[in-house]
Amino acid sequence: MNEPARTDDATAAAVAALVAALGDDVVLTGDAIPERCHTDWSGHAPARPAALLRPRSTAEVSRALAICHAHGQGVVPQGGRTGMAGGAVPRPEDVVLSLERLNRIEELDAAACTMTVQAGVLLEHVQQAAAEANLLFALDLGARGSCQIGGNIAANAGGLNVLRYGPARDQVLGLEVVLADGSVLSSLRKLIKDNAGYDLRQLFVGSEGTLGVVTRAVLKLHPRPRRVQTLLAALPGYDAAVQLLRRLQASYPVSAFELMWQDFMQTALEWQAGRRAPLAGSHPFYALVELDGDADADAVQATLAEAAEAGLVLDAVLAASLADARGLWALREITGEFPARLEPINFDLSLPVGAIGEFAERCRTALRRRWPQHRSLFFGHVGDSNLHLTVDGRSIPGVPHGAVDALVYELLRDVPGASVSAEHGIGVLKRGWLGHCRSADEIAAMRRIKQALDPRAILNPGKVLP
Picture 1 (tube, one colour):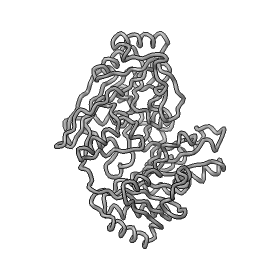
Picture 2 (spheres, rainbow, N blue to C red):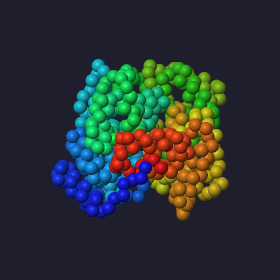
Picture 3 (cartoon, rainbow, N blue to C red):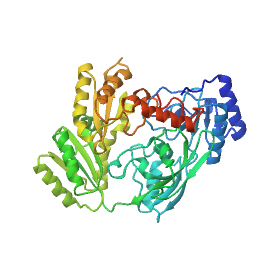
Picture 4 (tube, rainbow, N blue to C red):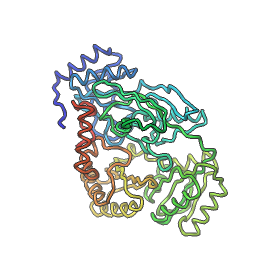
C-alpha cells in the first residue's frame, strides 16, 4: 500500500483546517512545537512535524482524525516517546498527535479488580494508584516514570513481569479507540469472559498506532502479593540458568527472571563505581530473580542451597530489605543510561528459551570475527524468551548500524520460530526485517487489515509494514 504523496500546500491546508476546528491551544506549529516531540528514545533522526495536536478529550481526537482523514494528512500518535523502534518519530510533513493531556485515572473498581484510565496516564501513576488500593498493576518496565499507558498498549509493552503476568495485551480488558476516519470504538468492558463476536480490542494492542489511536482503557489489576523475595545468583552457564528457573517455578510464583551475561554485569559495576559488588568475583552469568507469594527467606535460602549442591548456583545473595532489592534492580536497570554512555545499536530478539544461550554465543563470535574491537552487552528476560543485545557503535566507528543489523538478523533468521521483536515493536527501524519472521502471506494479511481500517494510510505512515 503506497503512502499518500504530500505537498506543502496540502499539509498547510490540513493544518489550517485543524486550527479552525480545534484552536491554537490544541494545534501548535513552528517553534511552538517542543523538540521532545521531534523524535523518541530510539535515536532515529529527528524531524519537526508540521503541527502538534494536543487534544483534551476523545471527542477532540475524533474531530482531529476526521479532518486529517478528509485531507489525507499523515498523523503520528505519541505517548511518552520511550519506544526503541522509531515508532513515534514524525516526518516533516506529518502532524503529531500527543495524548499527554488525556491523563486522568477515571475509576478504580476494587470489586472487579480493574482501573479505567485515559491513554496519557503514566505507567508509574497507574502502579501507585493500584498500590494504594492494595492491588497490583503487573506491567512494569524501566521507563515507568515516562511512558504512558496508551503507548504501552499500542506497543504491547513487555518488561519485567511478563513471565508470570504476561505483556500489556494480557493486562487490558477494554479499550476505547479512535479510527482513522474519526469513528470511535468504545468497548470499555470489565469482563474477563466475553465471546460476543470478534475481539476487536486485540487488533489495536501492539499495532503501534497504525490502525487506530487508543484514548482510554480498562486495565486488569491483581491482588497485591503479601511478600516478595528478590535474589541475585551467579551461575556457571546458560543451561544452569534454565534449570534454576524451572526449579524455582516448581516451588514459587516467579514474576521476574532477568539474566545478565558477564560483560553486562561488569559494565553495571563499573558505572556504579564506589558501590560494593553484591557478589564476590566474576562469573559467567547472573540471574536477578523476583518471587511473589508466601515464600519466606529461609525456604528460598534452602532452595538456593539445593541448587548449589546440584552445581547450578555458584554464589547468591537474598535481599534483606526493600533497599537491598532496589540496589539489585539498579544493576539490571543501567540500560536507562545506554543513550548517554553508549551509541547503542539495540536488538530485542525473541527465541525459544532453549536456543538463547547457543544463539548468543554464535552472535558474539560472529561480531568478534567481523569487528574484533566491538563492544557488546547481552542481557534479557530469558524466562519469557526475550534476549536483548546492545552493540556500542562507538566501538566500531564508521560502521553503519545497518551492517550490524544485517549480521544479527541473518543469524536470527536461521533459528526456527524466532522473532526480530520481542517487546519493542517494529516501528521504522525494524520495518525492513519484518520478513525475517513473518511470511509473505502474513504480511499480506496485515496489509489487508490496514487497508480496511485506514484506507488512506494516514495513521503512523511508514511504520511497521515494509
